[in-house]
Length: 575
Image (cartoon, rainbow, N blue to C red; front, side, top):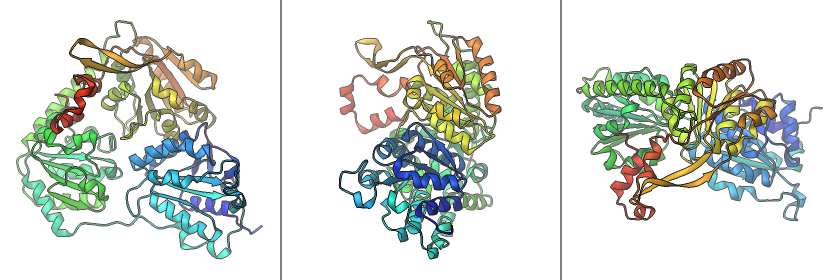
């Protein structure tokens, strides 16, 4: 009765780290661990596809700021999970993925699902190891968790697998209470005082300071708000950190994004890579602005633009140290911020009014702007907002606000809406979770509505159903362009949801949206999921579809454009 198996040890170590649930799909090679998790009282959210399990763990980690855990079986269980792992890898989300293997005596003999998983997963993870000996279990599992949480580099997914016969072995008593069982906090670092002084001088001396936040700033919302006030800086959030600063803060200038990037004389990046979403920091977009890079990750201090200065260390602590120093310095003129803020409020107000008054398409279908306007009116201040898909993502990214925002991320991994909604709802019971998705992206993981129903994941899923998935391409001979892509069926997604026991509504007119949303959100408040299938027009294009390929003379021209033109293309300037 006092024996502790390796499977039980894995479950106890997860429980000791505060893991309350594991997202999983059952399989023979993980059954001992599955049963041990249940015995330890850890909730198992069993899913329909391994990709969904990792995506749910991803959303759970993003919402809570702690470790998300997924468990999948060997062979196809691991390969199915790889898309979710790749998305967590690019998005730098701490997810631990656990799998199993055939018994060690059967290795390399043609056993069922006998694969070398770690060779596939090393490029997509911070840590990928097979544990083959009982004495290595606490040490290897602790190392995988530490790597996922970013103790020695970027946070991101880690992977371990254990042969099924090892899972049944008994752990020696001496290893059951060692230091590896409970782990340790993430190490913290700070820049030297002289560098903090120099950075404060740089900020105080600039006239047009622009702060751009990324994933590394999550968890530092209060410190960032104080820093924005102390520095008199304008602020652009991004999909990685949207919502961490309240929308009413006067530093917000999101609606003036293009002008703000063009006119700033100092750009401060907080835990943010200068990737394609920020035009790689190109002078074609940011002009002659100086850059101050702040992050706890080296990769976010030197990618594409080295900047005039970099501060490496704990972001909340750095922000507080800079705020303290700026309180005793005389700031340069800040009229630019006032002008940007006024422009932002004017544009944002006009956008809100325009969305509310948006007319249906000529086909009589719902205008996606009107759909989002109705959702926006009903969002709680602390809502978790999930946006997924093609064009509807572009609309939602601008229109919807919440204290937590999740989307497909820099990998562009569409299909996340339903599993993200399940993961977020399980991780944050009591908070409103609203996921908006296109019908094409919904189809990737739609079966997870069954998981939502079985586990009472209280989230609202709104499908923008325009029955199309296409890219518009304009050239010199076609004034209206041509459409390439996939024409989807005009499917009834509400009927599909109801077939799985989910309460669902199909709406076809503007007048039906409000009552359906009210009814659906009432269901969610009572602890169950709901779905709205909104029949939208494909005629209304987002601003994103009017940039990028939609404005390229032809595909071949992409190969000959110079760097500045490419940077402008990816910058997505509204003006």
